[in-house]
Length: 138
Image 1 (tube, one colour):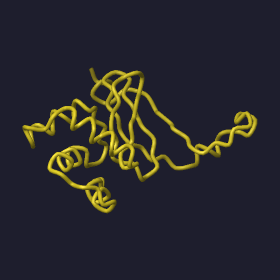
Image 2: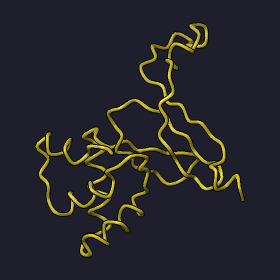
Image 3: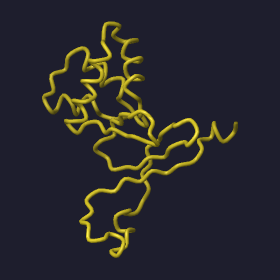
């Protein structure tokens, strides 16, 4: 389970009822919800929470570096609370399900010097694509 609530409290982030609910909705492993999905789940916990508050709270969490925006194939941005453990994503090409994966090895080391074209590479994003078990069985 992610430690999003604890990380936000540790940063001294003012924990209003609305912010707490958004953080609770995002907290966990393999969580990659859209803003609208966060809003729908947040309403179940706090009916008066507005869509604008959800969007603003997500934006603040991204700015703080406590949540990562994930965009795949032009779909809606998704929000990943797993911001402090390096990982890649496994994406279903049919339904869009996303899972965090932690392969061994160093993808930066796998890029040959001649393929860096003089770039000083500081970050690598890898996305594995395929079909999830549900879509593969259909």
